[in-house]
Image 1 (cartoon, rainbow, N blue to C red):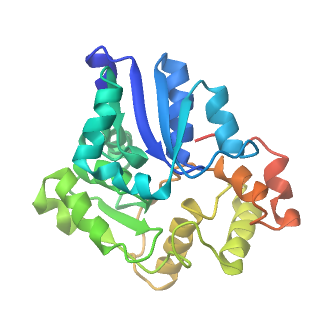
Image 2 (cartoon, rainbow, N blue to C red; image 1 turned 120 degrees about the vertical axis):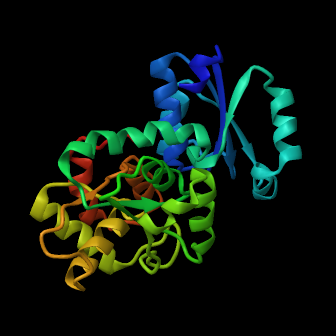
Image 3 (cartoon, one colour; image 1 turned 180 degrees about the vertical axis):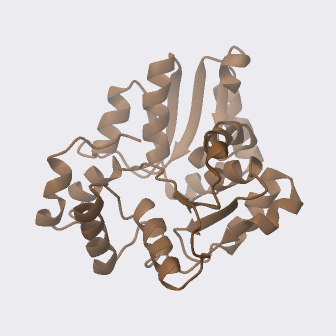
Length: 267
């Protein structure tokens, strides 16, 4: 880890009030003994289950206006954050940065002996896709499914982050499966999730993983993959976010009963 290697004991990052990244960072940092500070878009809601979890994990939170949050990539704004936290490592929203690629690349190393033809992942900020692409093997294509509208800009950001333009030909960045945009979903997607669970006993959530899995099933029906292809679907977690959807009453009560009755992955 970059922080450990540089004797850094404090981490600062950014996220929305229901951010999977903030949640995962807080829990991982507690495990590894880091202090954490989260700069959160919006207002404090004591009933927000994600916020409850990260506070319990020891993260200190600062809630900022949406206007201020838009500055999270601005270098002058980041310089001010660095002045406030001179001993901290500042991690971008979603964890997407060059130093994150190494960790994601380990997934490709684990899959290397299995002759994978395609590895498929949902894409939010692009970090997971970039990490997979950075360690891509000659026989493996990366299929990235963006979960937000008008995501074409992300493909170039991914290529720039990897800094290996020749690998672009191994990336299939397939738009059209966002189901209305980031954080949005439809009854069709919810039905797909329920059916998938009943068939395979694997939980999905409608923000990231379900959109990717839906896309892969649709691509298979279209004949996108040659017969006999070895396809790996990367479930990137995010199941903790289901609790927030429940709290905001964005999921039908009967539909989510099976989530509540089981241990979900806090990632």
